[in-house]
Length: 191
Image (cartoon, rainbow, N blue to C red; front, top):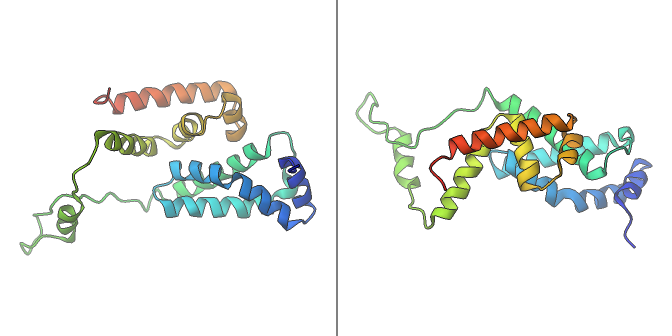
């Protein structure tokens, strides 16, 4: 019989590194899906997960067991993702993929070069719609993005989301309502 999350956490808190690794192995696929949904790239998602695991290891003794271990780990991940997002906010810049014909010397800038090489026709509209949806989700305000990801992608209940984010259930319901309204508004061209 496999040990429960709580049993693994208790052993890990007493210094059993194998128990901690077993706990992380058990929850890392779900945590990575959440990170991937929140991050701008796969590498950013991997960084968020690594920071989550380090923070979880450092705070093993501070976990009180009132929430599930899964909720505790997801909460750490959400906090790490938010910190990274806020830290990088000022560093993020938008790069146009269109030709830059305004170069002073008459030549195309490197942006123009990339525009031609990156424009590949789509094979299906379903793929385009999924990519558009993910892009719109990523552009939502962090509190709305987190709520949508946890509910619609991870399938957590309203109470689990509230526990994960450390907010009242009513706040989760409100954020989800507003996030869905924003998604509908931004994706009006899709049926």
